[in-house]
Structures are given as structure tokens and as C-alpha cells.
Image 1 (cartoon, rainbow, N blue to C red):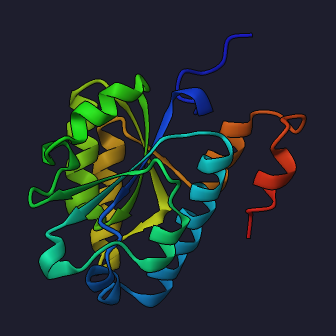
Image 2: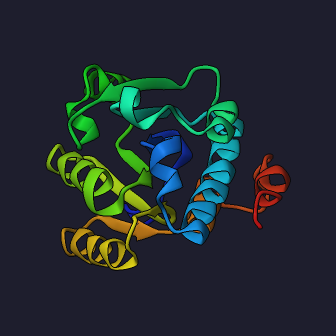
Length: 188
């Protein structure tokens, strides 16, 4: 059966966690940061079960700190970490070669900030012919309106706006999937 080309496939997905760092998270609205962390943790657990590669970036870690401990502890052993100073992950040394090495074309973006690093990364990846899915309940910005307008701009550029539950169910595709119970248990 043919499926819609924008439905996620576990075998074609890469989860990219953008700049979920201690100092950045501390200046986000508390409820937005909590949603971002919880959604990301669920996606990470599913990614581990389904063997989905995970790439992580840190924006200027000497000044903004490292990846949140909760997120870092949940990373799969083979997750790759990239330091960056450019806002787009695509400009981080080694990021694009690592992404291309996966051979996968569907990128799931989570992290912060929506209107800066998420937006620039999504636009650059789309320009390189990747299909980008931005997980709206797993991103945040210091100001709600910045996230709102970033999502509008991204959607106008044919970048897919989704949520963590949709990602999980698209990765599974069927309740008969062997990991259905474990992955559906990640819903909050």
C-alpha cells in the first residue's frame, strides 16, 4: 500500500535534539520547558527502542552549559554530540556528514529556541532536500509569540509541524507493531 510521503517512517528518521542546555532552559517559560523535556524524553525512549539515530547539538557550551542532565542520561549510547557557534546545526563541524551517513531523509527537530536555531536548522535542512518535522510540543522560545511566528514561517516553507504523539504513532504505524505497548506507554 502506498502511504503519504510525509508520514514518518522509523527506518528513514533521525531525531535531532537542538541545544537543550541548562542555561538556555533556565530562561524559558517553565511550562514550555517542561513540555519540551517530557516530549523529548518520550521521543528518545521510542528512538532507542526503534533504533532511530539521535544527533545532539550544543550552542557555545562554554557559556550556555551542556545538555540537560535528564536528556543526556536518556541518550542512546551511539548518539552523536556536536558543539556549534552558528545557529543552524548544519554549520556545526561534522554534523552534516554524520547526518548524511545515516542515509535517512526524515528529520525530527526538537529543542530551543524555536525562532533561532530550530528555524535556521529546519530551513537549511529543507534546502538540502531533507523532509523536516518540527515537534511543536518539544520546542520552546523565551517568548510565546516568537515560537508562534516561527511555526507560522516554518509551515509556510513546507516544513511539517507535528507533535510528539503523532511522531510516536507514525513510527509505529500499526497497533500490531512489536514495540506498540512499550512506545504507547510513553504517552502522558
